[in-house]
Length: 194
Image 1: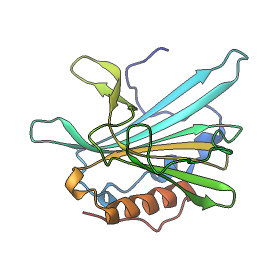
Image 2: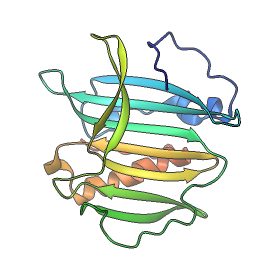
Image 3: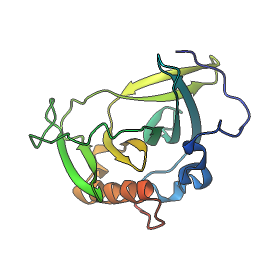
Image 4: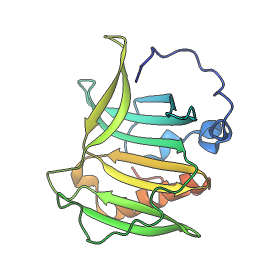
């Protein structure tokens, strides 16, 4: 895999992702449950052994501490996918392999949304892209996050968000689930949760 220095915004190569509603509108950062200090978008193009090209877009909304360290975020990745990779996945326990709450709810029709909530001091690894301006390179960051995963209308959606654990109440978790659901469905009923 090769990473390139960010460039000026350019049209996405011809793909169904280039017409996606998130690329047209993004997300209003004022609707997130933290103060957004930075926004980034990354386009990842990959090619499999057969030559099939797949596009992924990651939109990042970052909240930083007084020291400039990312300590809160909402990151959504959208990837083109011909088949639903979670079509037959069943949640067999109320927790993931490290004890965090996990659940499955209907998204729309036969599509579902999976939610993993940080409820322990352990977490499965969540990865996202972040450009380091000082070193002029793109890094893959591994951290903990509350996560959503879904497939809808030819796209896989993977969302990670992190806020202060004390503010990550049951109500905020429900609000973030509905917020994410509405983003995926392209609805304008959005969450305002500060």
